Picture 1 (spheres, rainbow, N blue to C red):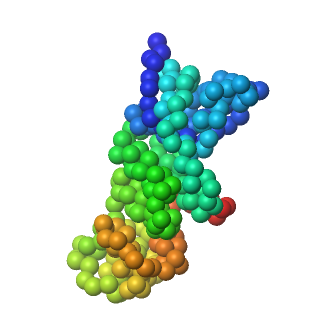
Picture 2: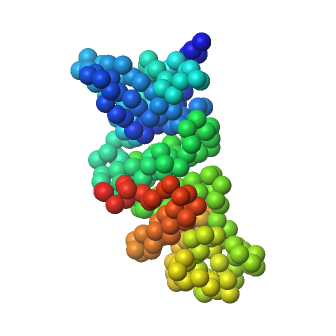
Picture 3: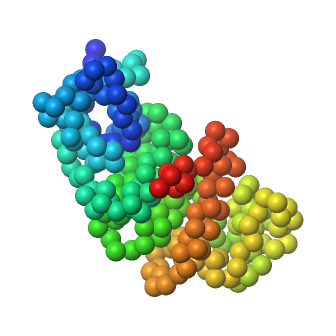
Amino acid sequence: MAEITKNEAIVLKKTKFSDSSLIVQFYTKNNGKISALIKGARSSKSKIGAKIDLLNHVEIIFYQKEEKELQLVTQVNLVNHFKFIKENLDKIRYASAISELIIKLIPDHEIHEKLFRGTVRIFNLLNESEKSEGYLFVQYLLFFIKEIGYEISFDECSICGNKIEGMTDNAFSFASGIVCNNCNEDKLTSYQFSEELFNLFKCLNSTKNIRSFKSKNIDNIIFILEKYLIYHNSDFKGLKSLQIF
């Protein structure tokens, strides 16, 4: 039997189905990532269609059948449509990359309330904060990496375990994380830090506020973390959203 379920969700993806319906991929608080059919959502008379714009934070009511891959959504209530994200190309770019991370790297039905809440929070920050979009994205990316099980240590070499001393002569191994100079043997699979870049990287992983930084260094950190995720996930080929926008 189907169970009527109410759940918070983020709209990740939608696909046309039949003449008037949609298949929507949601990331939900209590059911993880699910796909659902919304009948008549494309109709001009639909009260639901306008509420399921991509990236929207919504509350959905659906008939949950565990044995079925496609659930049936009957009602959608809008929580936040993140107006300012959708009016700014840079904000759209990074919000879309966040959505892409969940689509590509989070298994269907895997419940992770902390990750869901963190994703809602970063969308709110992108929508409201005056901080650099890239800065906020890197902070979310470090949080995301930690929550999916690949946390990066900033205090110890990921190979030998010795304490990372100072800011110089350290590198990032795409296979293992931050490494000391002694362990940085394979230059082909590592990225050598400048003191400035390592300092920014370490601060972004903390609660410190950074007053000034070079946007190029933010791009370099995103490159490093993207390569790290690619190394650990053979099916992941990188974030297309960052290339398109």
